[in-house]
Structure formats: structure tokens, C-alpha cells
Image (cartoon, rainbow, N blue to C red; front, side, top):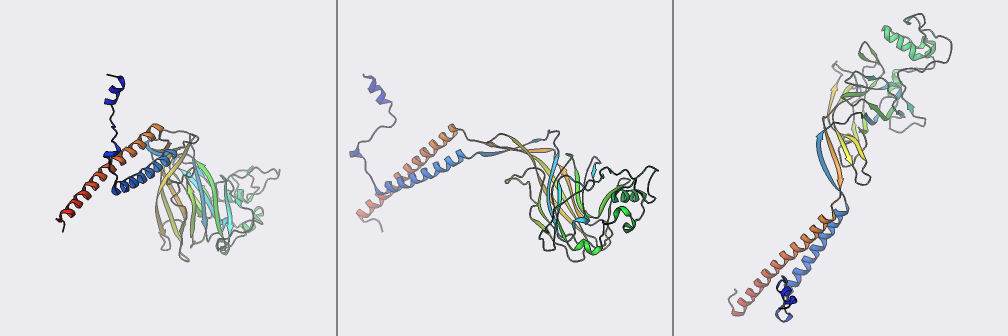
Length: 372
């Protein structure tokens, strides 16, 4: 026996002679439909192979040394920039008054259009050293004989420490500054945007009217108005880089309107989930944060306890979510393509046999006249 004859016995795909094969219209229809399905499925499989898939993993956050970056862009529609303070504090006791971490204020008119001028950069609470050799008077509020008040802020801080009232118009250092009236506060709007970095722990930050300062661990705002309308829009708020598919910015575009002459306190309670995103293109990890939010507003017109302002309180979750882009291997892609071709042709062959047998049975009954 020849070796070729042995190999022929192993042939699992014996060829049928053309004389014994019958081509039907039904078989042609099944072939066209199955070929179209195979082409579509292989095309979708090619797209899936070229596009990375996103895997999600949850584990305990063990990262250290990362600062928490707060990106903010908030518009207050009825309060001027000179009357707004942005303060931040955390659970360790660190307080940042009138923060200047790349936060800018843009003056707006009441219609929300920007006024043509340079944005106002927030000033840090500590005043720069005065190069002038003269010692300015503290108007009786100095704590020792060498205490000097060379700026208006120095005099204000000295009076606040002693809890004294002050007439700003009579202070030499404050002439030309703080020429403000109650009406001036509500003739403009303000857009506050920028970012600040705080300790990676639970904390809060808020927008409130008036100058802020601390006396004996009490946080105080120097603002005497009874009714403050704080209609606002959160254009953007995130804690890290923005990822489109994740909930890194659920408050973007939120607008809150307040009725006329109604003072309210707005609280946003944020639950922050640390997030790690690894892109397949460069493999560089991106540390950011997702967060969920619960909102609450409190009416202060009926002498309710509280202060008008927009308050954000946040807590960090001990768990971290990791998103990683992964590419499908070529072996997996080839296996899926073979499965598609073999599966569709097998099902199509079964359907073709059933269809042909059904048509032949119907045709035989028609010939004998038994089909009603």
C-alpha cells in the first residue's frame, strides 16, 4: 500500500463528485446570508482587536505622598469679586485663608459677560514685607512697641485680634481701598477659576462673602449684609485630571438659582474615590479622583443658624479604582475569527438541510395532491 493511499484514508473532508451535488435556490440564499453575517462579525472583531479594552480593578489605596489637586471654575452671578473669599481647611487643622494657589477672579456684569480688565489674583493672607523703613501706626491696636502696621491688611488684622470695630475711612493706610458700599456688592458677578493643592485627607473649602480670618480657632467672615443672593453655576469641579468615561466631574454645568432677597447656605458633600488610569499608548499612570455628591440647601431668612455661602466638604475612600487599557492578543483574535467562520457555516449548513428537506416534502405532497 502506498503512503498516499494511507493519507487519503485520513481525509476528514472527502470531496463529493459534481454529478451527485444539487444546487438549490434556498442553499444559495443561505450561503449569501451566512457570508454577510461572517463578514460583519469579522469586521467587528477587527475593530475590537485594534481598539484597546478597558479593565477595572478595585483594591486598597496604599499610595503616599500625593497632594490633592482641586480644579475649580465657579461663577457667582450676583456678588462682586471684592466681596468673595475662598478658604480651604482639612482635618489636620491646616487652614488656608484667602488662598492664592493659582486662583483668579474675573469680574462679570449681571448678565454674565466679562468686564474688560485683568483678572484679579487672590492674595495670600500674609502680607509681603514692607521695604519702607517707616513704621506705620496700628491706631492703638499694636501688641507691643515694635509692632508696625504698614498696610491696610496689617491694621485690619490688628483690630480683629483685639476684636475692635474699625472705621476704614479714617485709617491712612486704607485710603483709596475698601471704598465699598452695600450696593456695590450686588452690582457685579464674579467667576473664580484655577486650582489649589491641599493635603490628601478629609477637608472642605467654601466661597463666602466678606474677608475671612481666624480668632482663637474660630473661622470668621467680616460681612454685615443680612440677605445675600448666591445664585451660582459650577462650570467645572474635579480632583485631578479629567477622564471622560469616569465620574471625575459630575457637577459640571450645574446652575443653582436663588429667589430675590433670599439668603441661603449651600452644602455639597463629596465622597472621593482615588482612581488610577493606565493608558496603553504610553503606559504612564494617571492619578486622579472620581466623586459622588449629595446636595443640601438651607434657608437662612427665618434666623436659621448658619452663614450664607457655598460649602464643599469632601472625604476620601480607602479604596482605589484602577482602569487599565489592554490589547487583545493576535492568537485570541485568530481564534475568534475561526470560531465565527466555523460556527456560522455549521449553523447555515443545518438550516440549508432543513430548508431543502421541507421544500422537498411540500413538493411531494403537491404532486400527489395531499396538500390542502
